[in-house]
Length: 132
Image (cartoon, rainbow, N blue to C red):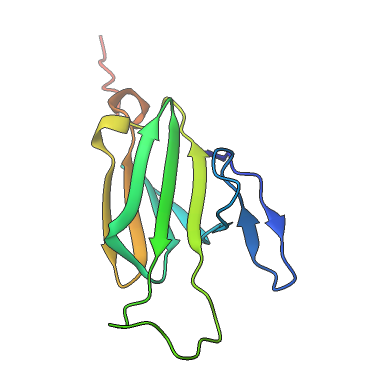
């Protein structure tokens, strides 16, 4: 799984990536952890301030795209604000070893957890050896 987003560093040591079709919006590359299990890959991405309604996870042409729009949860406009929430964007290129039709996702407490199962032919299996 290879990353497709080109990111640049900002003075605060955060990576900012821009989507090619929307130059006026800023995106932060969310930090991710990727784990390999016997059944596939698990991708965990930090997306603080993103709700299920403002999250878009899609696979198109072997590209996994994560896009999250952060929103303040206060019921009114702020009187004073010291930080601005920024949107998240990241892409990964998926190989043929991932069963793209069975990818699942869950969002809990600002952490997106993606399950990318291995394709049947990519899983390791025991080969029976016959004697005779």
